[in-house]
Every structure is written in C-alpha cells, then in structure tokens.
Image 1: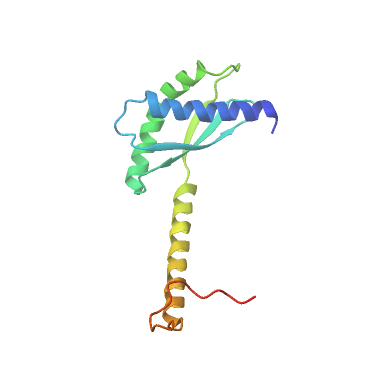
Image 2: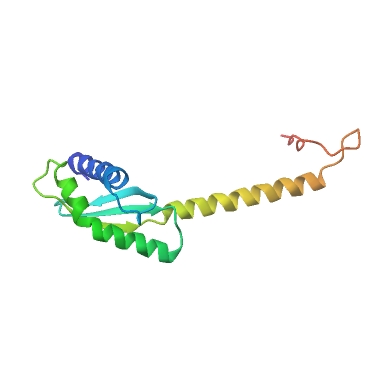
Length: 140
C-alpha cells in the first residue's frame, strides 16, 4: 500500500471517528469506536470497522442500522474534509476484535488466578506456621 493511500486511510479513520463522536446527535448510537479502515485503491469504497460497548446481537443490529441510516450524512461531512477527487462510499462493519481481546484477557486472568490459588494451597507453611505471602522463588 502506497504512502498516499495510507495517509488518506488514516485521515478517513480519524475524521469519521470525530464525526461520530462530536457531530452525531442520535441517541440510538451509544458508544461507538472506530477501530479500523479499509480503503480501496481507487478511493471509491471504504469499510469502516467499528466496535461497540454493547455486545447483545439486537443492540449491535440496531446501532449498525443507525450507522447505515447516517452514512450519507457522514460521507457528506467527510467530503468537505478530504482533499481527494472522490469521496469513498462508506460501509460500516462490526469489528469483534475488541470483544475477543477482552474475552481472552479475562480467560488469562482467570487462569493466572487459579494457578496462584493452586500454588498457594500447595506451598509449605512458613516457620511461623502461616502460609507464605509470596510464592517461593524458583531455583535456576
């Protein structure tokens, strides 16, 4: 990908995020985050990847519908901010990467907590009869 298209892609991502956060007065939107942007080589099509605080399927469909309804408005605002011959046709896509990251992080936290509990249960008592506060250092 050339430096020109990369710069335009970042500009679109930034401007669409600003429009959604600061210029949309639709209470149905909730908390929407622009997490990515795919721009075609001819600048005519752009997929905007968005993430939501809501994770219920009905809410996600509702917010995506609202974004589709607002697409013309967002494209019009974007057109005035880009210095390109054409304004890309926007398509909003639900990006599940953030939810997956949160789920994986939560699983890792659970595993770490279980391991620490197991190690604490099997640790020998200290000289005063109390279990040690910290696990013993591993020998090298």
